[in-house]
Length: 111
Length: 117
Image 1 (cartoon, rainbow over the protein chains, first blue to last red):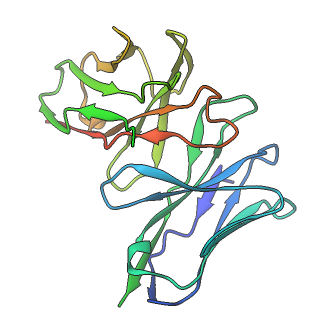
Image 2: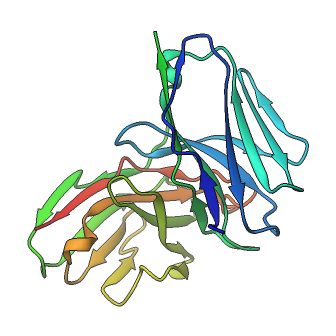
């Protein structure tokens, strides 16, 4: 099983739609998870951290399911500006400063 | 807003040539990183640097690669003898004194695109 797997998409959704992405991971010892956003040919930027109890920030909700080893990202009321690639990220090991990135899920929000 | 800056934004070089990519991390950050992203592929870790030494490096970061913090502001990545497969976007990143472990927040520069011919 790969370290981290994401559906590459693309997810093409109309403005205002709700869309959800999942990311599965293989390292059951991982304690921290993050969603980064990457616009085309730009640098990754942290979108949100994923805590055991989940995390909500405005239209974005992240959840963690340890039993099934996946994290999810839900975007409500999609905006055109949400169009980007969403990267699932976690530290590579205990005490490690190395982050492992998924390949990302591409989202296109259509007018 | 403080940001990580990288130069050059794009460099074209011949195979076998040496390349130096430069980065100015955010001033109060203590942890520095280089990542790379081959076109269409995922972001990959190369090396982390703290307290003037390498703290971790990946298998990609072989003897052809080196990093340096020559002064109080710059952080450089040198590729000694470039290969075709080194063509990629190279991202420099820095994180706060906690190392970003808790928040997962690395601040990335806009990247240096390296093309090896």
